[in-house]
Length: 382
Image 1 (tube, rainbow, N blue to C red):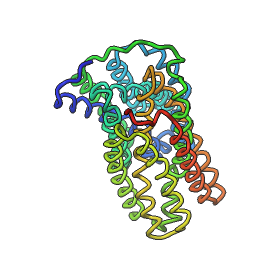
Image 2 (image 1 turned 90 degrees about the vertical axis):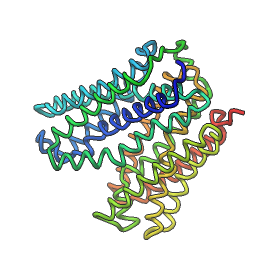
Image 3 (image 1 turned 135 degrees about the vertical axis):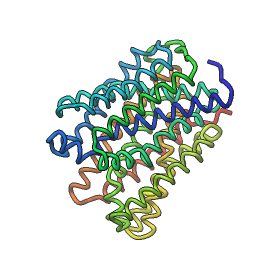
Image 4 (image 1 turned 120 degrees about the vertical axis):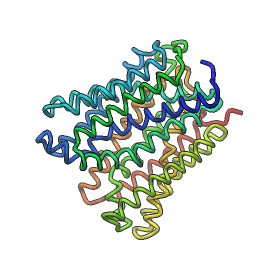
């Protein structure tokens, strides 16, 4: 596909970023609407939590075979089908008469989730050109960051104000609208030559997937319970917690901009900034123990955290012979890291040992730093 005019390319990238925003907001709706869904379906809150766990498991299990199945599809078509699946999923959830139908609705979106995230970064790279793949990834992944900063709080507020069913319908409408905009602004993108599974699993990618598994496990061991960390380390609760989370989100957007600008020219330096930065913030939390410094560490934590997906996805695109299949394997590593990290952090919290979760995050950051430093996937192009 040709790189179009700057204005058209910008609109196309914005459309893909908006689809990322909707995808992440939809994925995390059970978090934003936890009490409303539990009451609406007459189930416990842990049962609603299973809508998240099951989603992640379906993505991890299905992404590789589904990406292999759709590998010859036009990339725009693949994106449209998966975004449409988000719309259908939320429409089904909004009218679900009971919990079983809600589970089915979540499975619809989960089946397309991995395919969408395996193609969206590669599509952005084709729009801007291969030499700016990292920046393109940062642009579309801004939708991810905005989903946590705005999408989830807005969904929670709407759920409490107008009810959870109209809120879910709103997300369905947003997904449908983003699909229409992608169809109007992104030109057809024929699939590239198909290389077989081995092409997705060349040696250069194994360290990237290992670093992904390690750093994502560490990050989510702490991030899943960030409100508990704020309460225990920074001694903030109520509105002060919301204010600190907002500052965390703003810092994340800043980190995304900075890392997006540097990832193409200095891939190793930016990757090391992400992994070592995570470790440094966790160490500061452990050393300071409490107070203003701990609060500052929570905010600064967002700077490297925002770049995790960018530097790792850019590394995949940099060395993969078939980006879509390689991205699918990377997504599996990412999803396993999320589940493992949340499990480790939950166990620590359940035993009253939250600092252990923070220590795990610090150790994982250091281990990932060592892997990144030795991997050829993060070498400068020159």
